[in-house]
Length: 64
Image (cartoon, rainbow, N blue to C red; front, side):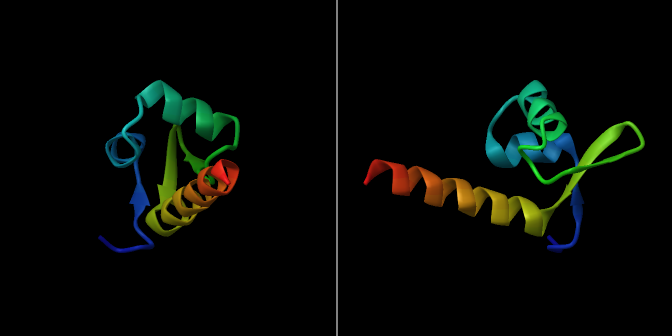
């Protein structure tokens, strides 16, 4: 998968293993660095990977 490729909400749900309404809420609340294109949210694979890595670091740092 090309890192610059735009992912759909459905693809994000499979990658992050959360529901479609959760992804949509995160996008709407700007918790995910996604853009609304027409009526649909999209996120670059590279941005999703960076966001996810940041969440993992937050979680590990909080456990210390």
